[in-house]
Image (tube, rainbow over all chains, first blue to last red; front, side):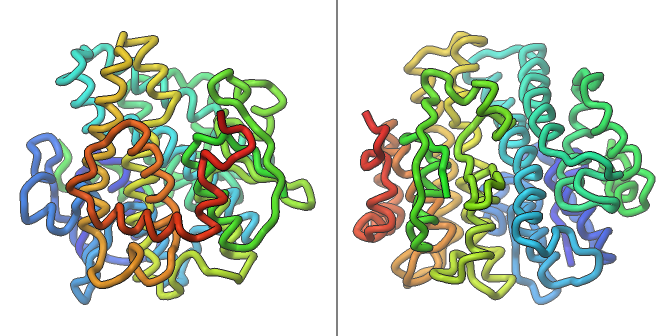
Amino acid sequence: MKLYSYWRSTTSYRVRIALNLKGVSYETIQVDLVSGEQRAPEYVALNPIKGVPTLILEDGRVLTQSLAIIDYLDATIPNFPLVPEDPFERARVKAAAHTIAMDIHPVNNLKVLTHLKSRYGLTAEDGIEWFRHWMTEGFQAYQALLPDGVAFSFGNRPDLADINLVAQLYNAHRWGVDMTSFPRLLEIEKRALALPAFDAAHPENQPDAS
Amino acid sequence: MKLYSYWRSTTSYRVRIALNLKGVSYETIQVDLVSGEQRAPEYVALNPIKGVPTLILEDGRVLTQSLAIIDYLDATIPNFPLVPEDPFERARVKAAAHTIAMDIHPVNNLKVLTHLKSRYGLTAEDGIEWFRHWMTEGFQAYQALLPDGVAFSFGNRPDLADINLVAQLYNAHRWGVDMTSFPRLLEIEKRALALPAFDAAHPENQPDAS
Protein backbone atom coordinates (compact mmCIF):
# COMPACT_ATOMS: atom_id res chain seq x y z
CA MET A 1 0.00 0.00 0.00
CA LYS A 2 1.01 3.63 -0.46
CA LEU A 3 0.20 6.28 2.11
CA TYR A 4 0.12 9.94 1.15
CA SER A 5 1.15 11.50 4.41
CA TYR A 6 2.62 14.60 6.03
CA TRP A 7 4.86 14.00 9.02
CA ARG A 8 3.18 16.48 11.36
CA SER A 9 -0.41 15.73 10.28
CA THR A 10 -2.11 13.98 13.19
CA THR A 11 -4.59 12.30 10.84
CA SER A 12 -1.66 10.78 8.91
CA TYR A 13 -0.15 9.77 12.25
CA ARG A 14 -3.38 7.91 13.15
CA VAL A 15 -3.27 5.85 9.96
CA ARG A 16 0.45 5.13 10.34
CA ILE A 17 -0.21 3.73 13.83
CA ALA A 18 -3.08 1.57 12.54
CA LEU A 19 -1.01 0.22 9.64
CA ASN A 20 1.83 -0.62 12.04
CA LEU A 21 -0.45 -2.29 14.60
CA LYS A 22 -1.94 -4.37 11.79
CA GLY A 23 1.54 -5.31 10.60
CA VAL A 24 1.05 -3.85 7.11
CA SER A 25 4.14 -2.59 5.33
CA TYR A 26 3.55 0.54 3.27
CA GLU A 27 5.36 3.15 1.28
CA THR A 28 5.14 6.78 2.43
CA ILE A 29 4.59 9.49 -0.18
CA GLN A 30 5.15 12.92 1.28
CA VAL A 31 2.58 15.66 0.79
CA ASP A 32 4.05 18.90 2.10
CA LEU A 33 1.04 20.73 3.56
CA VAL A 34 3.10 23.83 4.32
CA SER A 35 4.16 24.35 0.71
CA GLY A 36 0.63 23.49 -0.50
CA GLU A 37 1.23 20.18 -2.29
CA GLN A 38 -2.24 19.03 -1.18
CA ARG A 39 -3.74 21.58 -3.59
CA ALA A 40 -1.94 20.23 -6.71
CA PRO A 41 -4.57 19.08 -9.24
CA GLU A 42 -3.17 15.52 -9.46
CA TYR A 43 -3.46 15.19 -5.69
CA VAL A 44 -6.94 16.75 -5.49
CA ALA A 45 -8.11 14.13 -8.01
CA LEU A 46 -7.21 11.53 -5.36
CA ASN A 47 -8.29 13.53 -2.32
CA PRO A 48 -10.94 16.19 -3.10
CA ILE A 49 -10.88 17.66 0.43
CA LYS A 50 -7.21 18.58 -0.24
CA GLY A 51 -5.90 16.92 2.87
CA VAL A 52 -3.92 13.96 4.08
CA PRO A 53 -3.90 11.02 4.47
CA THR A 54 -4.83 9.16 1.29
CA LEU A 55 -4.29 5.40 1.15
CA ILE A 56 -3.73 3.62 -2.17
CA LEU A 57 -4.54 -0.07 -1.90
CA GLU A 58 -2.49 -2.78 -3.64
CA ASP A 59 -5.04 -2.87 -6.49
CA GLY A 60 -4.88 0.91 -6.94
CA ARG A 61 -8.20 1.76 -5.29
CA VAL A 62 -8.14 4.98 -3.27
CA LEU A 63 -9.37 5.68 0.25
CA THR A 64 -9.56 9.04 2.06
CA GLN A 65 -10.46 10.24 5.57
CA SER A 66 -8.35 8.76 8.34
CA LEU A 67 -11.13 7.06 10.32
CA ALA A 68 -12.73 5.58 7.20
CA ILE A 69 -9.31 4.22 6.23
CA ILE A 70 -8.79 2.73 9.68
CA ASP A 71 -12.26 1.18 9.56
CA TYR A 72 -11.33 -0.46 6.24
CA LEU A 73 -8.03 -1.77 7.63
CA ASP A 74 -9.78 -3.14 10.71
CA ALA A 75 -12.47 -4.88 8.61
CA THR A 76 -10.02 -6.49 6.19
CA ILE A 77 -7.03 -7.34 8.43
CA PRO A 78 -8.02 -9.44 11.46
CA ASN A 79 -4.65 -8.99 13.20
CA PHE A 80 -4.85 -6.62 16.21
CA PRO A 81 -8.54 -5.56 16.25
CA LEU A 82 -8.86 -1.81 16.80
CA VAL A 83 -12.41 -1.68 18.21
CA PRO A 84 -14.34 -4.06 20.49
CA GLU A 85 -16.77 -6.51 18.91
CA ASP A 86 -19.60 -5.68 21.28
CA PRO A 87 -21.65 -2.83 19.69
CA PHE A 88 -22.06 -0.85 22.91
CA GLU A 89 -18.39 -1.11 23.87
CA ARG A 90 -17.44 -0.23 20.31
CA ALA A 91 -19.68 2.85 20.38
CA ARG A 92 -18.01 3.99 23.61
CA VAL A 93 -14.55 3.66 22.08
CA LYS A 94 -15.73 5.47 18.95
CA ALA A 95 -17.33 8.26 21.00
CA ALA A 96 -13.97 8.90 22.67
CA ALA A 97 -12.15 8.70 19.34
CA HIS A 98 -14.64 11.17 17.86
CA THR A 99 -14.14 13.55 20.79
CA ILE A 100 -10.62 13.93 19.41
CA ALA A 101 -11.42 13.49 15.73
CA MET A 102 -14.49 15.77 15.61
CA ASP A 103 -14.32 18.10 18.60
CA ILE A 104 -10.61 18.90 18.62
CA HIS A 105 -8.80 18.09 15.42
CA PRO A 106 -10.96 19.73 12.72
CA VAL A 107 -11.06 23.03 14.61
CA ASN A 108 -7.29 22.91 15.12
CA ASN A 109 -6.47 22.01 11.56
CA LEU A 110 -3.69 23.91 9.76
CA LYS A 111 -6.14 25.13 7.10
CA VAL A 112 -8.43 26.57 9.76
CA LEU A 113 -5.54 28.36 11.45
CA THR A 114 -4.32 29.73 8.13
CA HIS A 115 -7.81 31.01 7.31
CA LEU A 116 -8.17 32.62 10.74
CA LYS A 117 -4.89 34.46 10.25
CA SER A 118 -5.30 35.51 6.64
CA ARG A 119 -8.99 36.43 6.71
CA TYR A 120 -9.61 37.60 10.28
CA GLY A 121 -6.18 38.86 11.28
CA LEU A 122 -5.45 36.48 14.13
CA THR A 123 -1.83 36.65 15.24
CA ALA A 124 0.52 33.70 15.74
CA GLU A 125 -0.10 34.09 19.48
CA ASP A 126 -3.89 34.02 18.98
CA GLY A 127 -3.43 30.85 16.97
CA ILE A 128 -1.58 29.12 19.80
CA GLU A 129 -4.26 30.21 22.27
CA TRP A 130 -6.94 28.89 19.85
CA PHE A 131 -5.22 25.51 19.66
CA ARG A 132 -4.83 25.28 23.42
CA HIS A 133 -8.46 26.23 24.06
CA TRP A 134 -9.97 23.42 21.98
CA MET A 135 -7.47 20.80 23.13
CA THR A 136 -8.06 21.61 26.80
CA GLU A 137 -11.85 21.37 26.38
CA GLY A 138 -11.61 18.19 24.36
CA PHE A 139 -9.14 16.45 26.67
CA GLN A 140 -11.40 17.18 29.66
CA ALA A 141 -14.28 15.45 27.87
CA TYR A 142 -12.08 12.58 26.67
CA GLN A 143 -10.73 11.91 30.16
CA ALA A 144 -14.28 11.92 31.57
CA LEU A 145 -15.30 9.19 29.11
CA LEU A 146 -12.65 6.70 30.28
CA PRO A 147 -13.31 3.76 32.60
CA ASP A 148 -10.98 3.24 35.56
CA GLY A 149 -8.47 0.48 36.10
CA VAL A 150 -7.10 -0.10 32.60
CA ALA A 151 -3.69 0.65 31.13
CA PHE A 152 -4.92 2.29 27.93
CA SER A 153 -8.11 4.29 27.30
CA PHE A 154 -10.56 1.39 27.34
CA GLY A 155 -8.52 -1.72 27.97
CA ASN A 156 -5.09 -3.17 28.49
CA ARG A 157 -4.12 -2.88 24.84
CA PRO A 158 -4.38 0.17 22.60
CA ASP A 159 -7.42 0.70 20.36
CA LEU A 160 -8.97 3.30 18.05
CA ALA A 161 -9.42 5.78 20.91
CA ASP A 162 -5.75 5.55 21.87
CA ILE A 163 -4.70 6.01 18.25
CA ASN A 164 -6.60 9.29 18.09
CA LEU A 165 -5.44 10.40 21.52
CA VAL A 166 -1.74 9.75 21.03
CA ALA A 167 -1.74 11.53 17.67
CA GLN A 168 -3.48 14.57 19.19
CA LEU A 169 -1.07 14.64 22.14
CA TYR A 170 1.76 15.26 19.69
CA ASN A 171 0.03 18.53 18.84
CA ALA A 172 -0.68 19.26 22.49
CA HIS A 173 3.03 19.13 23.29
CA ARG A 174 3.93 21.07 20.17
CA TRP A 175 1.62 23.93 21.15
CA GLY A 176 2.37 23.86 24.85
CA VAL A 177 -0.99 22.74 26.23
CA ASP A 178 -0.90 22.65 30.04
CA MET A 179 -1.30 18.91 30.70
CA THR A 180 -1.28 19.01 34.51
CA SER A 181 -5.00 18.17 34.64
CA PHE A 182 -4.56 15.17 32.37
CA PRO A 183 -2.18 12.74 34.10
CA ARG A 184 -4.13 9.72 32.85
CA LEU A 185 -3.72 10.83 29.22
CA LEU A 186 0.03 11.26 29.67
CA GLU A 187 0.32 7.77 31.18
CA ILE A 188 -1.52 6.29 28.22
CA GLU A 189 0.74 8.18 25.84
CA LYS A 190 3.86 6.92 27.60
CA ARG A 191 2.70 3.31 27.40
CA ALA A 192 1.71 3.69 23.77
CA LEU A 193 4.96 5.30 22.64
CA ALA A 194 6.88 2.44 24.25
CA LEU A 195 5.31 0.17 21.61
CA PRO A 196 7.15 -0.09 18.27
CA ALA A 197 3.93 0.46 16.26
CA PHE A 198 3.40 3.86 17.85
CA ASP A 199 7.05 4.84 17.96
CA ALA A 200 7.61 4.11 14.26
CA ALA A 201 4.52 6.18 13.40
CA HIS A 202 5.64 9.22 15.44
CA PRO A 203 5.96 12.41 13.38
CA GLU A 204 9.62 12.86 14.21
CA ASN A 205 10.43 9.38 12.92
CA GLN A 206 9.05 10.06 9.43
CA PRO A 207 11.18 10.43 6.30
CA ASP A 208 9.82 13.94 5.66
CA ALA A 209 10.37 15.22 9.22
CA SER A 210 12.41 18.39 9.37
CA MET B 1 -34.95 5.23 23.99
CA LYS B 2 -34.54 8.87 24.97
CA LEU B 3 -32.72 11.34 22.74
CA TYR B 4 -31.29 14.52 24.19
CA SER B 5 -31.56 16.79 21.18
CA TYR B 6 -31.72 20.40 20.02
CA TRP B 7 -33.96 21.08 17.04
CA ARG B 8 -31.39 23.01 14.99
CA SER B 9 -28.38 20.84 15.88
CA THR B 10 -27.38 18.98 12.74
CA THR B 11 -25.78 16.19 14.77
CA SER B 12 -29.12 15.66 16.56
CA TYR B 13 -30.82 15.73 13.16
CA ARG B 14 -28.49 12.94 11.94
CA VAL B 15 -29.46 10.67 14.83
CA ARG B 16 -33.16 11.46 14.45
CA ILE B 17 -33.00 10.39 10.78
CA ALA B 18 -31.18 7.16 11.71
CA LEU B 19 -33.70 6.32 14.45
CA ASN B 20 -36.57 6.94 12.04
CA LEU B 21 -35.02 4.88 9.22
CA LYS B 22 -34.50 2.05 11.70
CA GLY B 23 -38.12 2.35 12.83
CA VAL B 24 -37.19 3.04 16.47
CA SER B 25 -39.63 5.12 18.50
CA TYR B 26 -37.97 7.48 20.93
CA GLU B 27 -38.70 10.32 23.29
CA THR B 28 -37.10 13.70 22.63
CA ILE B 29 -35.65 15.62 25.55
CA GLN B 30 -34.84 19.18 24.58
CA VAL B 31 -31.42 20.66 25.35
CA ASP B 32 -31.54 24.36 24.51
CA LEU B 33 -28.02 25.09 23.23
CA VAL B 34 -28.72 28.81 22.94
CA SER B 35 -29.61 29.22 26.62
CA GLY B 36 -26.70 26.93 27.62
CA GLU B 37 -28.55 23.89 28.98
CA GLN B 38 -25.73 21.70 27.64
CA ARG B 39 -23.46 23.13 30.33
CA ALA B 40 -25.72 22.16 33.26
CA PRO B 41 -23.78 19.79 35.57
CA GLU B 42 -26.43 17.01 35.35
CA TYR B 43 -26.18 17.10 31.57
CA VAL B 44 -22.36 17.25 31.49
CA ALA B 45 -22.34 14.08 33.60
CA LEU B 46 -24.06 12.37 30.66
CA ASN B 47 -22.24 14.19 27.88
CA PRO B 48 -18.82 15.52 28.94
CA ILE B 49 -18.21 17.35 25.64
CA LYS B 50 -21.28 19.50 26.51
CA GLY B 51 -23.03 18.90 23.23
CA VAL B 52 -25.95 17.07 21.71
CA PRO B 53 -27.07 14.44 20.94
CA THR B 54 -27.00 11.96 23.81
CA LEU B 55 -28.91 8.70 23.48
CA ILE B 56 -30.20 6.86 26.53
CA LEU B 57 -30.83 3.20 25.77
CA GLU B 58 -33.79 1.26 27.18
CA ASP B 59 -31.55 -0.17 29.92
CA GLY B 60 -30.27 3.29 30.88
CA ARG B 61 -26.85 3.04 29.26
CA VAL B 62 -25.63 6.27 27.69
CA LEU B 63 -24.14 6.93 24.27
CA THR B 64 -22.65 10.17 22.93
CA GLN B 65 -21.27 11.41 19.57
CA SER B 66 -23.70 11.20 16.68
CA LEU B 67 -21.72 8.86 14.43
CA ALA B 68 -20.87 6.49 17.27
CA ILE B 69 -24.58 6.40 18.16
CA ILE B 70 -25.54 5.68 14.55
CA ASP B 71 -22.89 2.94 14.38
CA TYR B 72 -24.46 1.36 17.47
CA LEU B 73 -27.98 1.57 16.02
CA ASP B 74 -26.79 0.06 12.74
CA ALA B 75 -25.02 -2.80 14.52
CA THR B 76 -27.95 -3.70 16.76
CA ILE B 77 -30.99 -3.04 14.51
CA PRO B 78 -30.78 -4.94 11.20
CA ASN B 79 -33.69 -3.03 9.61
CA PHE B 80 -32.51 -0.52 6.95
CA PRO B 81 -28.70 -0.94 6.95
CA LEU B 82 -26.99 2.45 6.90
CA VAL B 83 -23.62 1.42 5.42
CA PRO B 84 -22.67 -1.20 2.79
CA GLU B 85 -21.39 -4.58 3.98
CA ASP B 86 -18.37 -4.57 1.65
CA PRO B 87 -15.47 -2.95 3.57
CA PHE B 88 -14.23 -0.85 0.63
CA GLU B 89 -17.71 0.42 -0.28
CA ARG B 90 -18.35 1.11 3.39
CA ALA B 91 -15.13 3.11 3.68
CA ARG B 92 -16.15 5.21 0.66
CA VAL B 93 -19.52 6.00 2.23
CA LYS B 94 -17.83 6.80 5.54
CA ALA B 95 -15.26 9.03 3.85
CA ALA B 96 -18.06 11.11 2.35
CA ALA B 97 -19.92 11.17 5.67
CA HIS B 98 -16.73 12.30 7.39
CA THR B 99 -16.22 15.06 4.83
CA ILE B 100 -19.37 16.55 6.32
CA ALA B 101 -18.88 15.36 9.91
CA MET B 102 -15.20 16.27 10.23
CA ASP B 103 -14.39 18.88 7.60
CA ILE B 104 -17.53 21.01 7.77
CA HIS B 105 -19.59 20.53 10.89
CA PRO B 106 -17.05 20.85 13.72
CA VAL B 107 -15.65 24.09 12.29
CA ASN B 108 -19.18 25.47 11.85
CA ASN B 109 -20.38 24.48 15.28
CA LEU B 110 -22.27 27.04 17.39
CA LYS B 111 -19.62 26.88 20.12
CA VAL B 112 -16.86 27.69 17.62
CA LEU B 113 -18.82 30.65 16.25
CA THR B 114 -19.53 31.93 19.76
CA HIS B 115 -15.84 31.68 20.66
CA LEU B 116 -14.80 33.47 17.45
CA LYS B 117 -17.15 36.32 18.26
CA SER B 118 -16.48 36.67 21.98
CA ARG B 119 -12.72 36.11 21.92
CA TYR B 120 -11.60 37.43 18.52
CA GLY B 121 -14.28 39.99 17.79
CA LEU B 122 -15.76 38.48 14.67
CA THR B 123 -19.03 40.15 13.68
CA ALA B 124 -22.31 38.39 12.86
CA GLU B 125 -21.50 39.01 9.19
CA ASP B 126 -18.02 37.45 9.59
CA GLY B 127 -19.71 34.45 11.16
CA ILE B 128 -21.99 33.93 8.17
CA GLU B 129 -19.03 34.23 5.81
CA TRP B 130 -17.13 31.72 7.97
CA PHE B 131 -19.99 29.22 7.76
CA ARG B 132 -20.33 29.65 4.02
CA HIS B 133 -16.60 29.24 3.40
CA TRP B 134 -16.32 25.82 5.05
CA MET B 135 -19.58 24.53 3.65
CA THR B 136 -18.65 25.52 0.09
CA GLU B 137 -15.24 23.82 0.39
CA GLY B 138 -16.71 20.72 1.98
CA PHE B 139 -19.60 20.37 -0.48
CA GLN B 140 -17.15 20.59 -3.41
CA ALA B 141 -15.20 17.68 -1.94
CA TYR B 142 -18.33 15.73 -1.07
CA GLN B 143 -19.74 16.08 -4.57
CA ALA B 144 -16.41 14.94 -6.08
CA LEU B 145 -16.56 11.72 -4.03
CA LEU B 146 -19.91 10.59 -5.45
CA PRO B 147 -20.36 7.95 -8.15
CA ASP B 148 -22.63 8.75 -11.10
CA GLY B 149 -26.00 7.25 -11.94
CA VAL B 150 -27.56 6.76 -8.51
CA ALA B 151 -30.48 8.53 -6.86
CA PHE B 152 -28.81 9.17 -3.51
CA SER B 153 -25.11 9.70 -2.70
CA PHE B 154 -23.94 6.12 -3.18
CA GLY B 155 -26.98 4.12 -4.19
CA ASN B 156 -30.69 4.15 -4.79
CA ARG B 157 -31.60 4.33 -1.12
CA PRO B 158 -30.24 6.71 1.52
CA ASP B 159 -27.29 5.75 3.73
CA LEU B 160 -24.93 7.25 6.32
CA ALA B 161 -23.50 9.73 3.81
CA ASP B 162 -26.97 11.04 2.91
CA ILE B 163 -27.87 11.37 6.59
CA ASN B 164 -24.87 13.64 7.14
CA LEU B 165 -25.43 15.54 3.90
CA VAL B 166 -29.12 16.29 4.41
CA ALA B 167 -28.53 17.47 7.98
CA GLN B 168 -25.73 19.80 6.84
CA LEU B 169 -27.86 21.16 3.98
CA TYR B 170 -30.33 22.47 6.55
CA ASN B 171 -27.51 24.70 7.79
CA ALA B 172 -26.49 25.59 4.25
CA HIS B 173 -29.95 26.98 3.53
CA ARG B 174 -30.12 28.67 6.89
CA TRP B 175 -26.89 30.56 6.24
CA GLY B 176 -27.51 31.26 2.57
CA VAL B 177 -24.77 29.15 0.99
CA ASP B 178 -24.81 29.60 -2.80
CA MET B 179 -25.80 26.12 -3.96
CA THR B 180 -25.71 26.73 -7.72
CA SER B 181 -22.57 24.56 -8.06
CA PHE B 182 -24.17 21.67 -6.18
CA PRO B 183 -27.25 20.57 -8.16
CA ARG B 184 -26.61 16.91 -7.37
CA LEU B 185 -26.67 17.60 -3.63
CA LEU B 186 -29.98 19.47 -3.91
CA GLU B 187 -31.51 16.58 -5.87
CA ILE B 188 -30.44 14.13 -3.17
CA GLU B 189 -31.89 16.42 -0.51
CA LYS B 190 -35.21 16.68 -2.34
CA ARG B 191 -35.49 12.90 -2.66
CA ALA B 192 -34.54 12.38 0.98
CA LEU B 193 -36.94 14.94 2.38
CA ALA B 194 -39.77 13.27 0.47
CA LEU B 195 -39.25 10.24 2.75
CA PRO B 196 -41.15 10.26 6.07
CA ALA B 197 -38.00 9.27 8.05
CA PHE B 198 -36.17 12.42 6.90
CA ASP B 199 -39.19 14.70 7.01
CA ALA B 200 -40.09 13.73 10.60
CA ALA B 201 -36.46 14.37 11.65
CA HIS B 202 -36.29 17.84 10.06
CA PRO B 203 -35.46 20.62 12.53
CA GLU B 204 -38.65 22.53 11.87
CA ASN B 205 -40.74 19.47 12.70
CA GLN B 206 -39.31 19.11 16.21
CA PRO B 207 -41.23 19.84 19.41
CA ASP B 208 -38.66 22.46 20.49
CA ALA B 209 -38.59 24.30 17.12
CA SER B 210 -39.27 28.00 17.45
